[in-house]
Length: 233
Image (cartoon, rainbow, N blue to C red; front, side, top):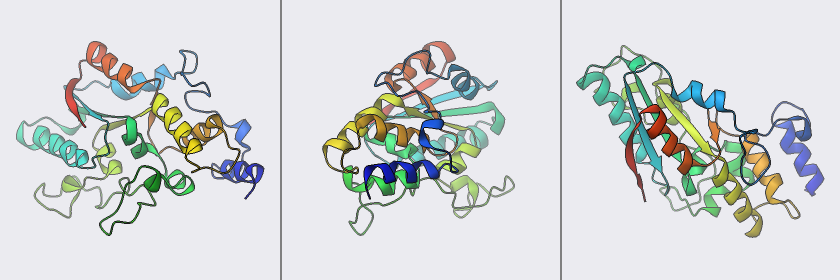
C-alpha cells in the first residue's frame, strides 16, 4: 500500500471523514501546548465529587497493574465501605505502557506487540489490545468472590465502568511514533507527525490526552489530592 492510500484508509476508520478534517487530540506538535490541551475534559474526568482518589503510574509494560487496580476498587468498596460513585482511580501510563491506550487498529497497523517485544503465552507477538474488552457482564449484584463476575474482571473497559480514568501521554505517543518510523514499523515515507496523529485519533474509548504524563502526575497530586502509587518499572 502506498503512503497516500494508507493515510486515506486510516482516516476512513473513524467514519469516512478525511484525516485532515479530524481533530488531533493534543494537537500535532511534539510538545502539546496549552492551546491544544483539552483542560476541560481533563478536569471533568479527574475532579468528580468523590471521597477517595488514587493514582497508579505505569511505565514498563506490566499488565498485572490492572489486577492491582481491581483490588483497590474491591478493597475500597467491600472492605472500607465506600460506595462505588465515591471512588476515582486514575491510570497514568507512559513509556511502553502508553500502548494500553491504543486501539486494536493501531496495534495491528504498526505491529505494536512486535515493536515493544510483547508476547502472548505462546511467545508470539501480541497483535491486538487484549487488555480492553470486558470478560464479564456488568452486574452490580454479583458476588465479589465470583471469579467469572465483574468484580474480578481486570479489563480496562470494566475498570472504567467502575470509575477508572485512563490518561494518554501525548509526549509518549510522539516518542513512540518516532521510534516506529525509525524502526520501519510504519509505511515507507510516513513521518513521525503522521504516525502520532493516526495513533491519537484511534485511542481506546474514554482515554483523555494530557501533555506529558510526568507533569499530569504532579498536577493530580498537588491540585486534585490523588494519592500516588509508584510505577511498575
